[in-house]
Image 1 (spheres, helix red, strand yellow):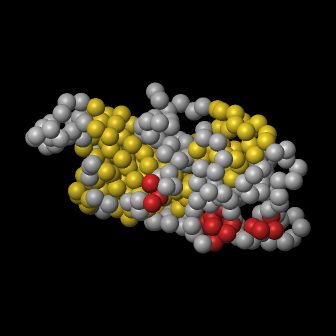
Image 2: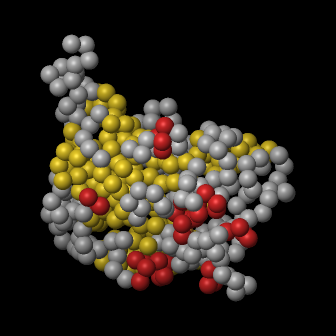
Image 3: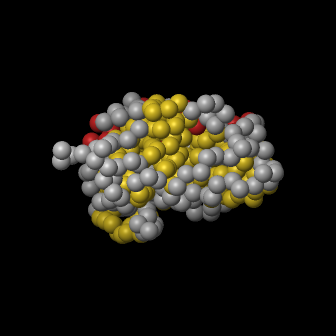
Length: 364
Ligand SMILES: [Cu+2]
């Protein structure tokens, strides 16, 4: 398994921007009565107290794309006890470049939730004592105020409960929706809740879970040190990095390993979520095609077939299947290719097996 979480220690420097200071983002629950604003300028200070270089532990935030709950194998409604724990973590966007992420469960995208249409979820939402900010979760699979956001809004060291029924099938985003929600989502707070239709999904050999989003930082791509959150680039919707699974080129051979390794003749289904918070993905498999593509993650409409590139807007998903008639490396990208070549948005699938010279022959 090449996708095990790891922990590194790197030098954190104060050279790039200031540290994002978290006080005052509470919105209506701010203790001084002042409203937090999306323009977080008043909430940032310089890193005056930090030495020039300080060792910090950095956690891997890239979710393992193959760490997905098993397919639904029940045919009557069930209840699920489900706990979501917020983790604010400092981690590397790429080697030597750190960022203060906000996550569900310490990973980006957050853990996939998987239920069957008609199932009920008993949710426990935990914001731990060592958090700096309030958080919550809005499930697009949920009927009700804020998709559960209001019911789950918790300050540090608070826990909330929510019970909901998943009444309609599809793959839906969930995301943080506190007042500075764009900041929280771009710091990593999004994932997929998959509601399988009552008839279930077709069998495939592999399932792959990926999430794209933009990171808005003070500093250039690759500039070493700690990158503070940058409100200016957020306001112009110009992310420094655009990544899959939270880190630059996270799920490739040179970083945490391929998103998946498959054999010729296998089938795979990709669950893809665009956290945004602002830019649409043009999701494309280089050297392959989306064999069956379920626009916006809809599982109650007929899939499109043999699709090259599908738009996935912020706050939405797609489900797409792949076949692998020939070996090689498939690159999963946002076809707005500057985001791939320069900003980090790439995951790869490694296909092993016999050549098929009738389908592809590079030595004719
Ligand atoms: Cu949050």
